[in-house]
Image (cartoon, rainbow, N blue to C red):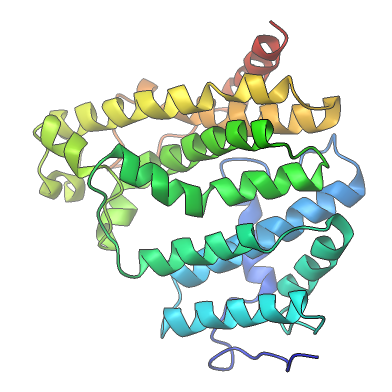
Amino acid sequence: MPALTAPPVAGAVPAADAVLAQASAENFRVASRVLPPAQRDHLIALYGYARLVDDIGDEQPGDRVAQLDWVQGELDAIYGGGTPTHPLMANLGATIAACALPREPFERLIAANRQDQTVTRYADFDALLAYCDLSAAPVGELVLRVFGAATPQRIALSDRVCAGLQIVEHLQDVAEDFAAGRVYLPQADLAACGCPEADLGAATASPALRATLARVGARAAALLGAGPALVCELPWRPAIAVAGFTGGGRAALRALRTADWEVLGRRPRPSRVTVLRAVARTLVEARR
């Protein structure tokens, strides 16, 4: 049995309560109420893992690489028959066992956060999509596996939806990411719109930055357009949950457009009514 792992420094990794408390602040619901309790619990376990890894990669003080190594050790314990030390990893271990989840998607989430420690710019949209394949696509695949609905076709559709959701978040977080030294807007799109990076740190969005955001946002909308095709592939309960994720992303993108891409002075958010309409539209489109 593998030895138990421990955080690199006592208290160095986020506590379970602090991680899960962020669920209410997320753009997209973690677990739909239409799902059976067991599936909701499994989705929350996936959320806890993804949020833990992201918090370490984005926010934690100290040696983030060592802390990500610790997460890798926790996965070693789970898949090697040992016992992880962190409550969120213990919850994840139960979900992995119950749903027979493969290790590779969890490893990709760690790889995305390792990449964040060294890569701060993306040359073009294809490079950004490759990053989304590490940082977002694994979550969608794991959700499908929890639903017992993972097929190559559905995973491919999910990859597109998850990339769209991730890119919408990047559009919302331009100022926050720039302050942290990261730019997720592709360099090619900034150049095409004549937008210098300094514009990302201004008090208000310049016309060039708005044009860049609209350009990238149009691609995000096209990716989210895969949502209805995925919804129509699923049983009704998972279909409603996936429509919720897709509709949330579409509503967030609509809020950005309505705000004329002003993302520096504030973070535009959709109303609950707007989200519900977007979810309903996704369900209608899935039936066509």
